[in-house]
Image (cartoon, rainbow, N blue to C red; front, side, top):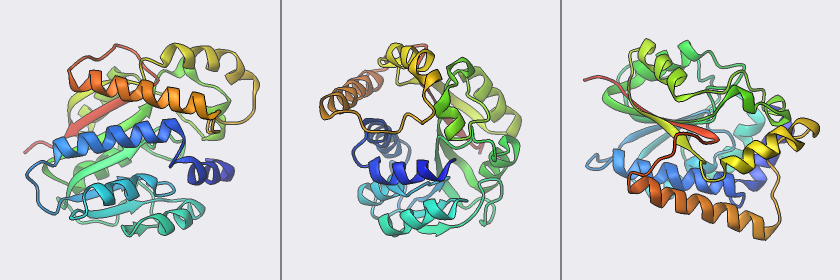
Length: 246
């Protein structure tokens, strides 16, 4: 990822609708997956500038939080935002013992050109406890590639089928793979296929306050639909839940 993207992430992840909606969605899923587990060990694999860890820290103060981030400039922001144990480490090789982690979150990381999918998922499998959970968010559909992908060094975008195959090959049971950011997907397509091919910057820039609030509220409504079991077969992101077999 270009250095300026980490600066933008650090400045905007508290206010930009994309990050706020993603963090809300992750926290909702963490509550579901960790119900009944005291002092869960949670890894944020590719924690970036630390915004997600900071939110988890507030939501689950009893949790043991670990964050891995290869980029030192991103890590310098993260240490200011969270008290989690942070490691300057690649997600391809984790400084942890086998069978020690209850849950791994990895938000828009595996797509990166420096991440080896097999090594990354192999480390997830190795470090998760039997029955442990992997939650991932990933960019969807290679035909949606644009200048944003060049800025954030995208190697690949995904479909539900491609992610399910990768998890299965790594020994992780894919309990769910579906799409999110579905209600805004038509606007994303228009943007990516027009301005998204012309401009040379990423999509991480805060829109005017009205649009920012509108997009966030659309995502909140989509999350309500999700809780009621209503999911659409398309979207800007792939959401994945994997489980290490007992």
